[in-house]
Length: 254
Ligand code: MG
Image 1 (cartoon, rainbow, N blue to C red):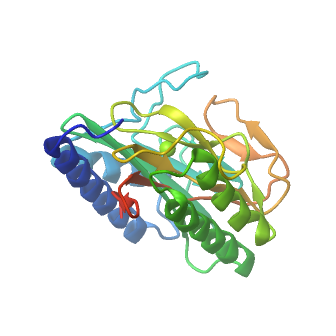
Image 2: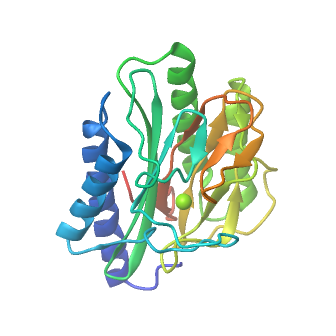
């Protein structure tokens, strides 16, 4: 969406604050022995207690065969994104890394964010993969300036990941957000500076670098949602919803 007035902007900012608070609570709950379903339940409860709606629950993304059945996406280790927390429920183990991706609708406006967090003590490679992917998000946000192009964001993200020796998961990427869960433009996590759609003040975007420690070949699980790496290598995912302002974007879900 493109923000049209002060009320929309206030609602966007408030929704982002609420989403960030839920993600903080989820991060604090992550520990060995906790189930994916417990995380999903906490996310849904917190969102509903705030008077808002989970916006992934019941949503059917383009190409999917059925509505998404949960509030939260929980993707562990080689699961890249869209792991379903409440069907084949998993127990978190020491050494896992777990991606938590969540969207909510506040006063009609949708915000979307994701973090990847360690479960107890994890390997140095997994720590580095998470750090690099979060840094790639920071680099993408820095390039998300009115007057730049979508390709500037894509390039910044892709460079940050590949420079560190990891791979970009090319099938997935960021998107416009706000009125709908997924809007134009698609924001690839690799690309060329100066290409693609012009970035304009007021645009609301979800940037989401997704990386792999291996070959980044993607397979879709039989559940129709969970993407995993074909070679079993770890994957990390970080996402913020941002509002394009000059001289730099405002992070809505910080
Ligand atoms: Mg997203």
